[in-house]
Every structure is written in C-alpha cells, then in structure tokens.
Image 1: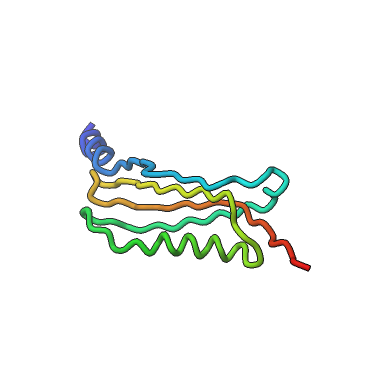
Image 2: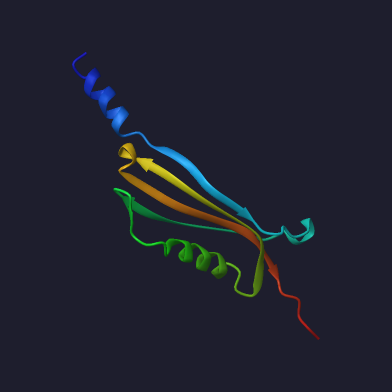
Length: 108
C-alpha cells in the first residue's frame, strides 16, 4: 500500500500523449505504377516550448529522395505529429513522409 501513491503519481506525471498536427497528400499515381514505396521519418525534441530548429523536416525529405535516386517520387503523404511528455514540458516533433518511387522514362 505504501507504494500505491508514488506509483499513481508517477503514472500521472510520466504519461505521453500523441497528436497529429497536419497531413498533406499529393496526387497519387495509377495503381500499376505504385510498385516501389519509400518511407522516411525524422524527429526533433522541444523542451519547455523552445524548439531547437526545424531542419529535421529537411532530413526526412533528403532521406526520401535518397531512396529513389534514379526516379521521381509521387503520391507523397507527409504527416506531422507531436508526442507530449512530462505534462507538456518535453515534446517530440516528428515528420513521416511516404510516397512512390517512379522510374523516369528514357527519351529516345
């Protein structure tokens, strides 16, 4: 019984909550072209409402492009989500991107 109050207090303080801020989707290619799916994500820590840059979005985009070096990416879905910890004092921002790598048609 003496551990019940600290356990309840700890479970209240150290819980997390996830929310999705935004989702965007570009034109999705025809079903026959959707053979190679590429997925990338990157995150950033925010402490006491102070973000330490937003270059994590660029890292996710660059990683997505690296997975499709000789083609183009279409049907891109990007999702921005936040996970709050410690009563909102720490937040992890994450961007998840996915799309379809389409091979470029050769001219000739």
